[in-house]
Length: 198
Image (cartoon, rainbow, N blue to C red; front, top):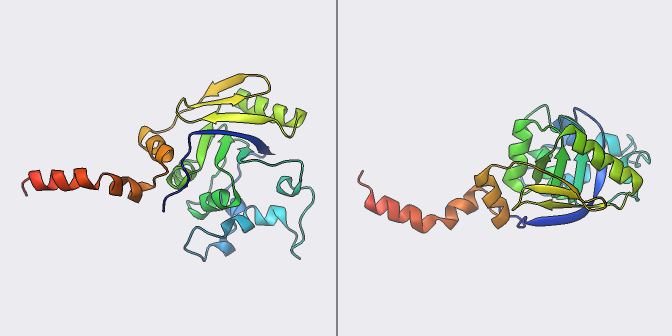
């Protein structure tokens, strides 16, 4: 399933300064019945966003209208816990294209990269600067430059680099998942097969 290409993203951000956010908090287990990637955004952080009667919890950040954007900024150790792909699907389906943290669980990071969400890991010091920038101005914008692997706080010009696996980076720049990548090099695969003895 192809997704939108990711090149340079300029956006405001939604702050979630909570450490050890696990995948069951991102998308509770009772919402894992679907097998397609659609519809999970409605239940992103479901138990934090809504009361048991379905009414929104006003104090939760996703219900606060002063925050918006395609960047979610989380605390240290974001995406820990079970390996469910649905957590990354929920983040993407809600509308986030980038998650920033000082540390990601490996499986969650890879699940994000597989579906077009860029996990940007920064130092704890730079993460703190991002949170402070949002606190000073909820509409503060950030530039996430995938080709240069750099994130910038536009209000101050401060920036920091991040690292992305080269294969995953190329896929994100082209909007490919793993199947799209193989289809894109189908001619090369067929030529190799023709010229390689069994």
